Length: 626
Image (cartoon, rainbow, N blue to C red):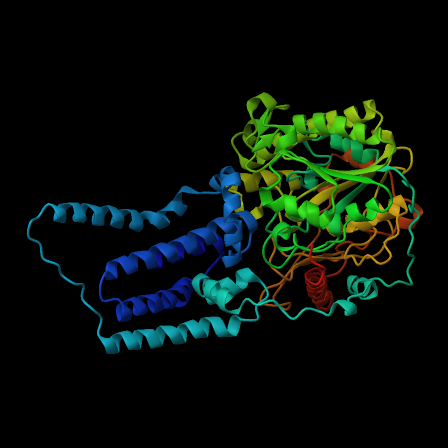
């Protein structure tokens, strides 16, 4: 148990005191062992083996979950176990061989007991010896001592905000037990007290500021096409490696559109499906679990429902099975009129775990043309997926040669996969231009979530990322995704340095279409209106993390011991010629972004972010059921 504890801590925590796993993990193990000694009269070894296996699985799950999500696993993740088989290649890619050492004793003991049973079954006469028992007084003394240490570890750290800090202070096993015993939802804010005025105030702007931007109804009546790019991070935009342009089509689109380099993911356990939910609803993800599972039973206000009132057809395109991440129920909750999944796209030309982006875009462009030909405007969301972790792109799909130092690395595989995704996106754009859909549409493109988790990168990958950024790769870099909005002929291109997140897409799109959001409680804001912004984060960063113009803040046990990170600048990764080609924003937005990183996130902002999360949880949980 001691060896397993140290192996787990080494994989998750940094710079731990040598004594800490002993002080936090061993007392919990002793408590379990005392119960076995007190209550097991027969099959004691069997109970020890069960306890050993259970604790080992908890430790192993903690390692793997951290490497993927950057947070400590809890019992809530059991609801997602059925999704693991669909992304098993991603799971295995995170598996360092030494993690498996945690199972060595179990394998050895199983072999030993099987061999002993076989040998004993060959004997006619055999004697059975019971294992020695610890004396009652000794067991009571060990139990009492362990219980006191466990309470000492848990009690002072109950209010810690950062789950990693909390698990390190309590011990992983104590943390898991505490979450089962004490993880109860807070009392919701009464629905009638949740108003748009209160939400706007918490976000940092008030209704007396301009309510309508200069872009209001610039794309009125147009089709809406929202393209969600798998695992696409912002540092790829404008990036050249050894003179090679990585995403030429997106670079071209960014130059011809509204490009937001300071845009951030707000997803959680559901990853891609969470992005779909947040982008379509303007609500935050739930505290535990995926939005597609936790919120699918509610009648969720959404962009699809909003546009349906204006006569839009609403559709969504995803090449995987609609049951994956409970999307069938989520799409019903969000009010999409029709979905296209694997039944439509088939299994041809599979990449990752469904049809390739080439198939996705080819078949989708034809459907969008058919929708336009009905004479009604449409809203369609298109979910790309070929650049999915762990980025094992078939050689037949390679569109670029990597420098030798990038070969056989996660960073290199990621860049090559995104280069392919960019290539197929360029084909899609051309298809829409050729069939007459492009010029009649408002196109929104963004990354769904990060592709290179900081905590799962090996040393050679960190070195490559340092080469790309010219400094160490940070959590703020990791969370930064692009947003590009294009309305050909209706909106002039510009670089917009407004801070934004995925929850801001609904009000921004509504503003461009001239669609009123009166009566629609939402937690995003119009990014073309020049307001300050505040983005609460829940996953991939510890709870209580937030992003403002001042930077990114990650709490410790609370605000006082938290860490501030500056927001990344596109100038660090993009080619200078690309940056110089971006048009400046209009006069109404020239001041946005000028105060980036010129202060630090305040305690008051931190508390407002927590309140925003609580208000969102409260509001969605009180929506009518479907």
